[in-house]
Length: 272
Image (cartoon, rainbow, N blue to C red; front, top):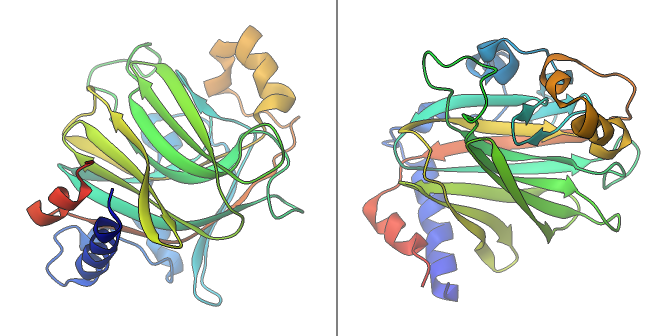
């Protein structure tokens, strides 16, 4: 993508997010009102799963942010034992957030696969049992620490009919701005760098419905005990809250903003 496209994308995003006629503006949240958390749907409540959340609240001090700490868990394949707060969005859209993922006592989490970010998920089809396999369809971009050297990373993951593939990229400490843009079955995952927005990854997902769950995800400490259970006791992961791991993620979301793509913006997002 050309440098001029980066600048145009950033300009259009800023203009669109502040526009009074943005039809999706009611879905955005600056996290400055503690009561606004009531406007979000939690995944575990909506589908009847255990609560894998240690702490979730809107911190109204200073400039305000959504504070989210998960219990040990992860999202992979058919496993979804981690907090996910969402709102439903129909059609094409772009969602952006500014997120900081730190460890309990360190700037970058020390426990493997401790990250937070944006996720979009296709709701389970009506009439399909919540335990029936082959119906998990989602993707996300998150920041924190995944694996290898203890350095900040991005994790991107797509899951199609319960089968996941992930890619990991280097990131930076502190607050990070990320975005997901949808046009049909094509999804662009963005990060904001010094020179502006850039595409981190493009994903084509054939099984995402017209209406998607869009929101914030967090998960932590896969390797300590969850990895062993994933190999030997996978069926119990979604229905059990484990407390023998070492959660090491404090996620803070400064805002989450949703807006409808206009045709000129879609043109800017095309990959040349």
